[in-house]
Image (tube, rainbow, N blue to C red; front, side):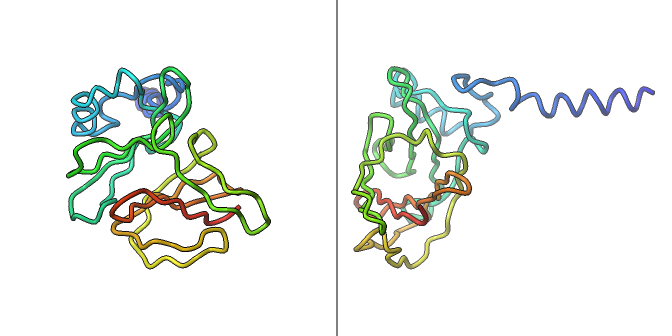
Length: 180
């Protein structure tokens, strides 16, 4: 009986970290690497933005600028507007780049079906994300011309609906629509 009780308690405790946090809660320190917390604190960004727990994993690690050093991406919420964005912490950059949420607005080209160009400034629709290896890019029919990636990228998705690649080309962040 004790073994079964311990298994039930362990299972409940393992599920607790994700189930008891609301969108506006800060994830426990063990879910975000210390260098991310330190950098956000150093740049005083936590007074304007909070780390969102909407996505799991809470952060992505990749080499987004191709310098061979680890970089991080964290989903954030603007405290005033509640708009979601992505904070990109490049290891050698002088500042944290904020995509959406009142920061950099990414441009999506007109779509193949004639939908007009848009500026992406809210990532509230994203329900999945992952790191994509650096690869040669080809126009998808949505975006022309396509600048080359200098490092890894971030695939953002509305599962079973739409996806796009966010990548850095050495000067700015780019949006490459993958599917509609």
